[in-house]
Length: 291
Image (cartoon, rainbow, N blue to C red):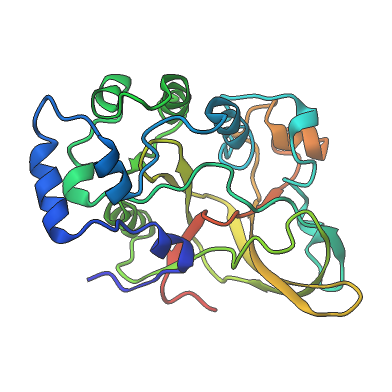
């Protein structure tokens, strides 16, 4: 058994389908003629049709913290949050900093139960076959990113797949899922009240990708550190939020045009790059790590 402490974002993503519904749709989806209708999408809490400026949002999401050195999507620098990457030196108790936007721009989608997720092939034909109303351009952008040659990890279509990958990557059965507490304070000037570094050797980071159902891209983070940062109001000292920060200490494998280098004004291997985890990003560590 895998002992897990999951925070609210992962709990909110759990499939609302009943056991009966899951079994029914798992059997039905095997039919070559199955198409995700409004009833199925509503029951499963999926985003089956285009209802937002999807391609713009998807490209902007992939151009910043989801890239981790595999940046294949670019947007003008003036459209990137200048506080999305920072140096480790700013993480000092008492410092007042500008917190970047922690809000997720992609629409809400729940995980599919594993018996349904396993029947969906993550390629243009497989997605279009079941979700014909989904944005082909947005799906294509996601698949292009996920299939980049430099990326060796895989997409996780269910919470069970995410957990199994994390167990394997960390070499542990007991896991701890970490995430930022909320989006409160996004875009504000806040004071760092307390910093806690997790005493760990390995981290698995999972970031949501755009498909009609919740899907996370998970990968292990070499040469990285993770911190929990408590923020307060600069004047009153009132508690605001607790946010996770990940610092990549070795940026030498990252491409020279990575957005982090444009913001931080240095090149690959010339310094560390840190960023905050947004409201639905997850970081997995060994459950026995020093808290």
